[in-house]
Image (cartoon, rainbow, N blue to C red; front, side, top):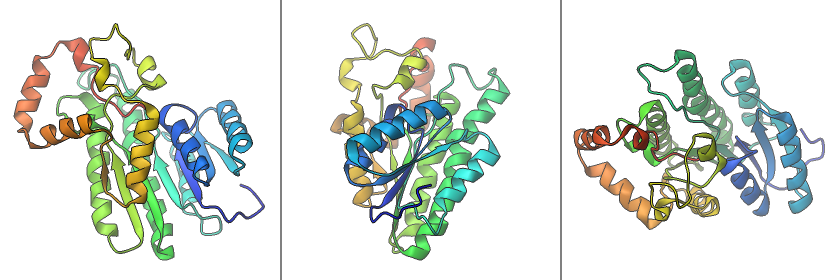
Length: 274
């Protein structure tokens, strides 16, 4: 933690060394925020922090933590809830996907997914509101996914559904406090998340390139919605249309269509691209 006070607001971003998390950190720094960057890899954190300090002239605090570890998560929660060095913007972005079904996958893998995608979001969001509400200001951005609207998209979809509903619940409870909560629900985003999952955004993909989103478009749209206090952000008109359809079509129909798809396509559900 920096010993010299700054007049700039502070944003804490989890999963800040790659994909959407790195893009959120850069965009918030560009907007004049000091940063607390959180991820597991200390070397990547230090490299990320150094680059941000050099390019944007902001203060960057490094906090190495595996959010599936409860003691490490609590350290991050304590930082989020600090009254002496307040966090003005929390971005819950950290996450990962599993290329295995829920019913016959490894239980430990699914428990870790739940801890990072659900429990960490809950714990950090609660720590943030506990500090922000008394101050009368603050913003929380939770990275969900259009996958959270798809029954049959595996444990990842279930986890993102939790993030969506939790954030919408928070948004309602926080109304009138000066604090807001927003969930971003992107579709396919071009990040290393998909490379690690064996997905392609190039011409060889069975998916049309038109459905892939650029990171900057997702980040810019969601931050605009965050600072406008909107509870839900779905970047781009085409994904807004997809989201609207998924929201009104009976879930049994969506599930039936999903279950008829080839197994390879099912693994390629829309993801947040952390």
